[in-house]
Structure formats: C-alpha cells, structure tokens
Amino acid sequence: MLQEFLVRGGPVLYAVLLSAVMLWALIAQKLWFFYRESRLVSEQLTQRWQCRTDRVSASARQIRSAWLSQFYGLATSGLPGIAVLIAICPLLGLLGTVTGMVHVFDVLAVTGTGNARAMSDGIAQATLPTMAGLVVALSGLYFRSRFTRLASRQRQALADRLTLVGGAHG
Image (cartoon, rainbow, N blue to C red; front, side, top):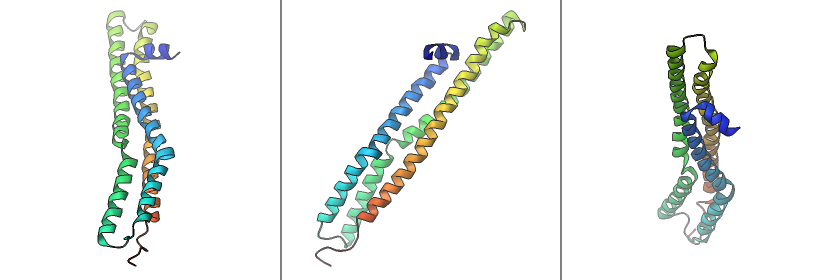
C-alpha cells in the first residue's frame, strides 16, 4: 500500500518521505531526551549545586547561570533542524503540485481533454505530495511547540532547585 501511494504521488513524494523520516528521527531523539536524559542531567546538576559550599556569591551565580544555559542548550538542541524540516515539507508538497500539473498539461497537449484516465495520474501527482507534506509539517509543528514548552518548564524547574541561599559562608 505504501509503495502504491509513493508511485501514484510521483518522485517528489519520495523527498517528502525522506524529510518525514529525518523529522521523526529528530522528534524521537528529543522525546528520548525529555523523558529519559533530562531527569538525569537535572539531577546531576542539582547534586553538583548542593555539594557547593558557596551558593550566594557572584561567581556562584555565574556558575548557576552557565549550568542553566547548558541544560537549556541540551533541551533545545535539534529544534532548529525540526523547524527547517517543518518548513521544507509544505514546499516539497508545492513542488509536487507543480510537477503533477505539468504532467496533466502534457497529457492534455497529447490526448486532448477527453482522456480523464490519463489525466488522473498527473492529478494524483499534484495532490498526494501536497497532502503528505502538510500532514508531516502539521505533526512536526505539534512536537516542536511541545518541546519548546518542555525545555522552558524543565529549565525553570531546574532553576528552582538550584537555590541561591545557604552554604557555609551564609
């Protein structure tokens, strides 16, 4: 069934499929980070912070800020790649529309308007990549916004755990 869909959609649909695979690989990587690795990184940073005797000086604040930035960098890595793939998929769908319509016009030039069966292949090449590109992009948009919110929330939760009070120096 997938092979038939790809054949009917034309060569551009293979590019949409490749983009979708790359997008979902990045999404799976971020899901793994947020639901497995981020807890470990956050716990390690919290433990390192709690072991410090100085948690109130200017240098301690700088260290805390650097650790929060490091965590946020890990949490948001890969999001620009996801954004690029989200932007590319509808454009590939549009390219499929153009190439499919070129095919329809070629059929019209050769056979005239009376052969609807011959035109249906071009119409499929015009509509299937567009639909596929939009579906892939919309699913990616959901995860991109979810990951952006998770990164901000987890960074704030880590900031709340890295308190700026206490320590041996008062």
